[in-house]
Image 1 (tube, rainbow, N blue to C red):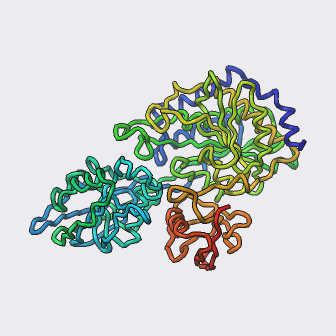
Image 2 (cartoon, helix red, strand yellow):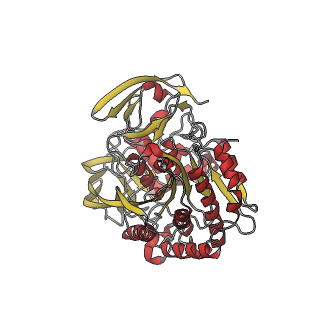
Image 3 (tube, rainbow, N blue to C red):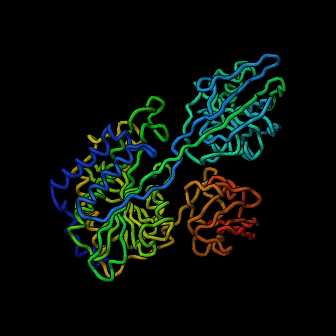
Length: 583
């Protein structure tokens, strides 16, 4: 039995009850109530209320006498129009489209300045090799392409691969086909301008169009969409190009940058040697604000406060409680307490910290991440626990030390939760992830503090304290296991056929797709790619972000050769890869 597992067993009894009983429960209740209060307006990224939450955490740490700081990183919080004009010409008739009513820019739209580009209807803009194909027989180059946002809820579309379903994927294909612009037909009014999920900016202009904005300028589009829905077959092939129906467009967007906070505090270790090593306890502090993005509450939820009591005031409060308890416990190794911003926008805060660590990254030995831990079922307590990058034996040892009435569903790999532990695993740091499950209030205005099981949260805090102390006090810490850290990136509805071996950086990068590292024995490693490299071309395709990279990778099969270009500092590098299949 290894020394770390022995230390676990020695501390097993400590995990059975909250170390401070009802006092811990009361503190957790107070902290969650503050973070999920209406006054904090959902702690959205770019909101001043997220700064208020960070300042609250900072005060807590300083009140405990801990050295603490706020680290900031940039985030595109708002997109606004600087210039706009849209004129629809149909024969001799000219009709300006009204911005904010008939038409609006989509958040990732590129700028535009062109005159009288002809319109073409392309159904839903879907192409599946050997299957449904809106592009068959159509010419889209230098045309304004009209597509419907919502795919039909019919059997014919039920099995479309995920890679063909998203609006972003469909628009990016039209960008590749060199369309002049994309008009997205909505089921109702044009959608408001907001930052969209995905890349900050595409090269192609993309506009949201109200259901009746085009009138009959392009024929009876509603009848064509109904035909697609009823038959499951494309209805664009027989569309007669109408050069007398054109769009003149001028659009310039301004993107407003905010500085989003991470909060970092240090509990110094007592051991003269081991204090130079760190165990990280983390939770994300941000949520959805007023539900402009990522809300699952539908159109009526936009503009409402999304309190995020479980996601993730629960985890943030739990880390604060762990800080209080572990300072008194005086662990041998040092403890880093972290509250991340930007998690809801793609793990931005944790990725930024990995790239710009406030403490030596090579000295971080393990990371525990708490995300949505407030809904433990009192009747049948069940914790979902992941071990991304952790040895299977470490996860099994941790599972055995849970309180007697706990049921733990343990998973090794990425299946449990896409949260900030992934950033650490990609940096070759083993992690545990704690999660009490998805529920009907997830990403909705109803995720409120009154729904939190505070007794269960206190019990989880006690369990987290036990695991953190065992890691901090053990002679050796479990080493990173690359096998449990593998993340299968999925493309067109199933596993990618090709394994390349990059560990992605999900944050936007203006130059291309930045990688956080490569997996051992992979094609990427054999080519000489390293953490920090920025891939700019793959197999003849330009790569501007992770979405381009996924598209390029998904277009290949095992045995293909692909020339890859990347930036390392100011140097451009290139090599040819022979692509391998996934094992």
